[in-house]
Image 1: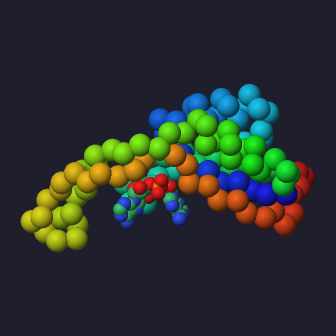
Image 2: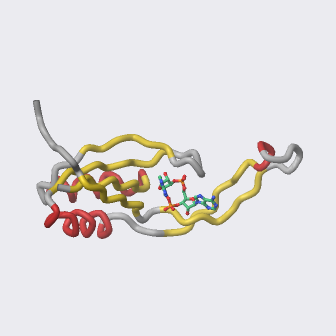
Image 3: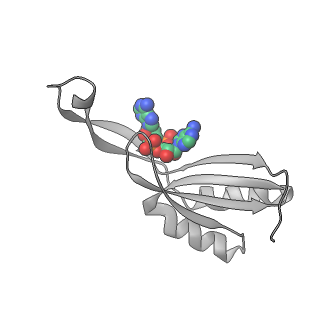
Length: 107
Ligand code: 2BA
């Protein structure tokens, strides 16, 4: 069994959730925050048998879109007086971790 952690853009989270539910993939949705942009994103966790992992990744890939966005970054925290200016960052898409599950139980 594997545990899949998928971090997706909030804009895509409803689509991803609906698609996972439609495919009857067990999932938990968590509100999370990206360390770099300090903006809300969504983390999905799903525990599935090994042969379902690629299906889950496929559903997530199909419902999250990779794109670029201009985001103001406040550099004054690093060097006073510099202020903030926009940089181009990639958003959307999904960051996915697949890890082995040693034990799974419901008690
Ligand atoms: P954030 O940390 O808010 O990062 C958002 C996007 O900003 C990243 O998209 C990346 O394109 C850019 N970025 C991040 N760190 C950067 C840096 N030091 N310099 C320039 N640009 C930078 P993604 O790579 O697609 O990541 C989306 C979100 O996935 C991240 O949000 C974070 O919440 C999570 N994530 C990504 N890699 C991770 C990892 N190795 N471990 C844990 N969470 C991760």
